[in-house]
Image 1 (cartoon, rainbow, N blue to C red):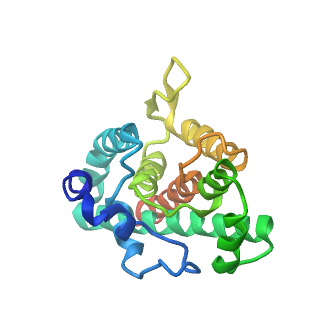
Image 2: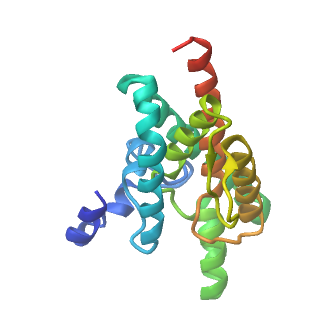
Amino acid sequence: MYTAIFVFSQYKIEDIFSLYNPLDEKFKIFQIFTHMFVHSKNIFFHIIFNMVALLMFGCQMETLLGFKKFIMLYFISGLFAALFQISFNTGAIFYFMNSSEFTIVNKILYYLNEDQRLSIYNFIYSPIMGASGAISGVLGAFAKFFPEHKIFILPFPFPIKVRKAIMIFIFGSFLSSIFNFSPGIAHFAHIGGITSGYLIGYIFKNKKI
């Protein structure tokens, strides 16, 4: 899919398959699923990190859960991650614009300069794309099953237990989203993915898989 975005760039696949806010006229029901399979052309290392994380944690979780339950974990986490991000975006739009009507938001954006418009767009208006939420869910479930397993997380130069690492990651994502440290990244999708994945892992583990 990532390759197709470049090869068939004239069709603007990423614009069609990305998930827009349900209040937006560009929203389509199929985007709820398709947004997990497209990535931004401008953030190449994002998809690299996603694929490395999927390889590291996904293989072990699929072996543990089996294919069907792993697919359930992946897609349900991705859906909840998108819901978290959309809820945050909608709340931010209402807070900053005092409106949930995208036609009014568009009119307001029209009167801003290019930098202001881009800043607001990246913060609250950008469509959601990427597998980060679903893969965060896999990580969350991994943390439930293997809380004492140690991994490296930047910027720490030493390994940290997974259960501590995800807390650091959630806190960092929250700060990054609130203060817009990393524009263009759906930080609340990461939080929603990890949280839902951890809860799904809890359910699976209690069934003594």
